[in-house]
Image (cartoon, rainbow, N blue to C red; front, side):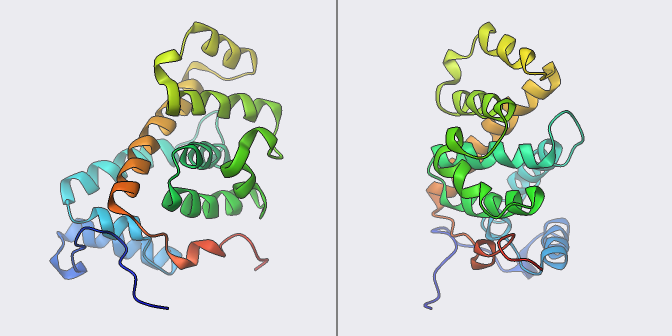
Length: 192
């Protein structure tokens, strides 16, 4: 396979990066066995790298009314709508692992309304999609419907924030032409 760039913008070498950025990348590599290309592509702007991953972690790694799998469902559904190959592939792998379901990511990315998820999760993704595509239309009736399906105000904030944050991520991944790591394609598909 030819050597395909991971971004249309220059990617710095690890030894050129500030210590904290390099350390974060090496920790991810140690945990996963590879460096997800998003870390390398965004490392070219260290201050933005730090801010991006701090907000990412605040949204995706916290405890709350949404499971970590549901958080990934939001990412995959909205990234599919935004046609972001990087985020669909990378977060699809995480979703497969978190939900222990090798089929779910593709179902959600292509059409979450027909995916094998609960009615409550479909309502969650309807709202996430609306935030992603038509946030100007969000109104009190959307919030009331989510409340009727057991979502708290904090859950609703999380759904909106994850959708909005990944809207930024999707757009930057598309602008940079960020290439998904080959490793992501097989994660969570085959039994270990």
